[in-house]
Length: 296
Image 1 (cartoon, rainbow, N blue to C red):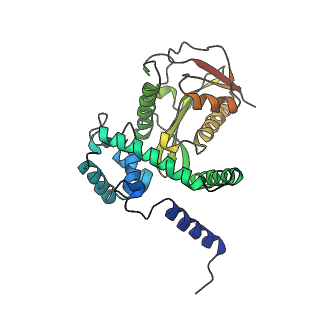
Image 2 (image 1 turned 180 degrees about the vertical axis):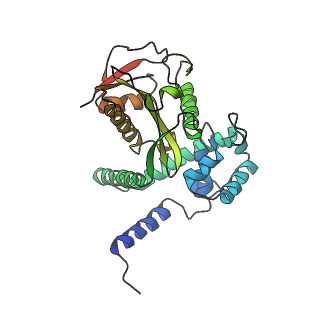
Image 3 (image 1 turned 90 degrees about the vertical axis):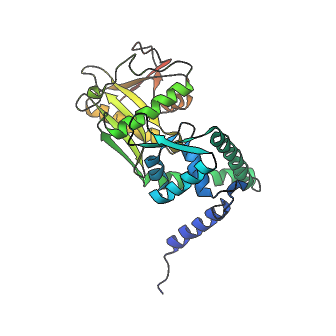
C-alpha cells in the first residue's frame, strides 16, 4: 500500500476530530432527539423560511434525504412546506411556532456547546483557536464561491431580491417599498447601463449586488445583500470589490450608495472599506446614511 500523503492524513485527522467534538455522530444532537443533520435542516429553514431547492443546494444533500428529513420535521409539528407565493412550482419550507421555538433552543444549546469547547483553554489559546477556525472557514469557502453577472430579472436575482426586501422590512422601523425612492429597474442594471451580480456558495445564490452607471458622475451601488447563513465569510467585501471594479471599468471616478441605519453591519463594512459619509445625493425615503468612495 503506498504511503499516504501527510497533508491528506492531516485533513482526515481534522475531519475526525471536528465531527466527534461537534457531536455529528450523536443520534440525539444537543439532547434534542434528532440527528445533527435534521437539526441543521431545521436551523437552515430559518426565521423567514427557505425554498426546498435552496436547502438541497446549501446542505449538499440529495432530494430523497431532504424529503425524509422534512417529513420528519413536519410529523413533529416543527415545519411545513407549501408552494411559493411568487411561483407555485417552487416549494418553500417554513417553521411553525413550535419550530421557531425549537430553533431558538438549538441556538442557545449550540452556544453552550461552543462555550464548552473554549472553557478549558486560557485566553491566548482561545484566541488562537478562534482565529484558526476563522481561517479554515474562509479558505474552504473561497473554493466554493462564485460571483457572476446575471440578468436582474432572472430567477436567481429575483430570489435574492425577495429575501433582501423581506429582511429590510423585518429589521427597519420604516416600511420598505422598492417601487419608491431611487430606481433600480432591471433595464438600469443590465450592461451597458449597469450590472447585477449574484454570489453563489456551492451553487446556491446567497447574495446579490448591483451597480448603476451614470454618464458623468459616480456609479451607484444598489441592492447589496448577503444571506444570513453566509455572513461572516468575507463574501460582502468580495462582492463590493467586484462592483467597484465594474464601476472603474466604466471610467467612474467614484462610487456611492445609501443605506438604512438598521443595517449596522453593512455601515461598518462600508466605513472600513474606505467609504466616507456625505450629504444626501438623492431623495431615497428609506435611507439614513449616504456614502461615497473615490476610485483610483
